[in-house]
Length: 353
Image (cartoon, rainbow, N blue to C red; front, side, top):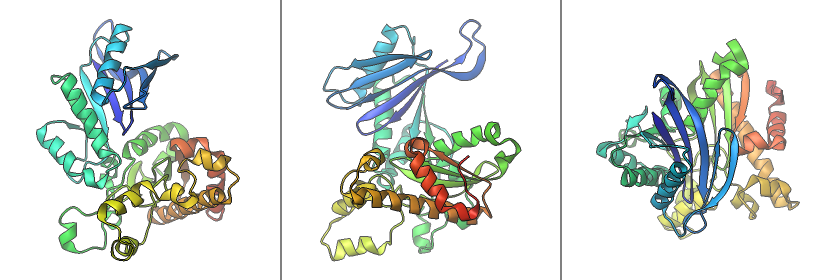
């Protein structure tokens, strides 16, 4: 079976192709990645980059302008023309929010799609684009089954002590709770832990997913116990353009005293806060690290301070910490950020290995 996996964004999408049968015998096997790539710059200057068998195949310009459906169709046609795939038999999608009902991979049907659409206000930066990828594939090949995998699902194991918000019961009855995100990333890390830590893999592990979006997850027995994002993707750590933990009264003040309407408030919280709001320069950590502007330095310092605080509070939830894992763009590529966070946590025994 040939499986296409899509991770759809606002102006780009990543894709990978897996095969789950032996090519000669047709016997089932664990899916093996055959190639991966990305289309970016939609809708104007799309470029496709893919690799097959470890070879980088360069950049290929796609016809412009193109929406996601046209770009995806072009990708499939070019991969088929190069004999890299024959036909797609199933599609898997990363979907950010599954709510309370969708806590495992789910075959996409009309009811599941409607439920995912209803959750879009809780993840407006991501959910609409995830669903656009599903619709694009349905338009291209309606006969191909599609499966949605949810970033929230990994955190379904959180106990009520860590998933419940101290809000009116009538709100909580409507699904207001801490869901958490980046679950597919955390789940992958959990799968790798035995190879890295041996018997320690089932201990008290804290994973810091530090990218343009950022969150911390505390695991015990490789299951989520506590995570820093909540109902939406705004809570927790300072992010590229999102504020993280913020006094709810700020939103009331903005509406009542600053004259913002709901759309302006949403834009400010999702697009104008975080590293960008702190520095006034950029939400990109690489740009800030290269800058000698003191505002950039302050933004980085606050990012690290808040990350350390959230790791420490997660250690309280776990009753200690046996290992800290850094992942995602900043977590993997910024040694300075890792060192700064570890330095702030030296009191609890943190050190870079």
